[in-house]
Length: 261
Ligand code: ADP
Ligand code: MG
Figure 1 (cartoon, rainbow, N blue to C red):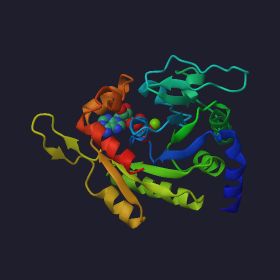
Figure 2 (cartoon, rainbow, N blue to C red):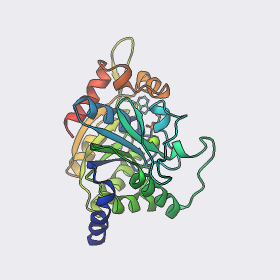
Figure 3 (cartoon, helix red, strand yellow):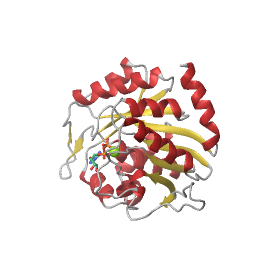
Figure 4 (spheres, helix red, strand yellow):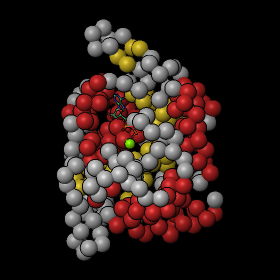
């Protein structure tokens, strides 16, 4: 605990423009970390906050696609620091901007962790109320190194209601507890599906899982997001739902979650 706290304090200087760092995390891949991180960052911005997003998913960066900024590259005014890519008012950086999008990352853990810390620390972040970090899936070395070296204010855990996702979500909460980072709460993504014809809500991956988990770990269920075609399509075209359909019922759900943060 002590080492983690000390390291966090040491690194505070490099990113002292940032008031709060929120790590969006999950034990498992494909549950909607990136989707939630992007829409939530935009929802926080709508509340008047200054927000940035850091894509820490070094092996599968998806923020550039979801923000429609794939072909952009950060400028390096002094060959060391990078200016973040701006999209919809969000300041962003991602390993995806820096490497060939079709080249697979074959870095080992220590190199990947180092690259990530660099992207965080060498980016010329503007004054930010929140930096949302889209974390890589899992609870391995990279996640632990990040959690110990980045002054994370709090973590938000994303899960689906499915048992295999919930098991991994528990590992995520346990990891953050170990490094003394508070968990703000859990967001249940792909919670249900709303039929586009009849409006019926159907539970696809099960029901009540995240609520139960929140209770078990004495944290909050921050919100439930349905599995909807619109959410997927908007992200695939680089216009997240909070931007493309700001008045939709789905955007409202993100605003509510942002209000809880
Ligand atoms: P992760 O970052 O956890 O790996 P993603 O956010 O990339 O997961 O989500 C995986 C895929 O599922 C993406 O292609 C995304 O568009 C889609 N997706 C995520 N959440 C939803 C949702 N609530 N409704 C529809 N599609 C979703
Ligand atoms: Mg992702």
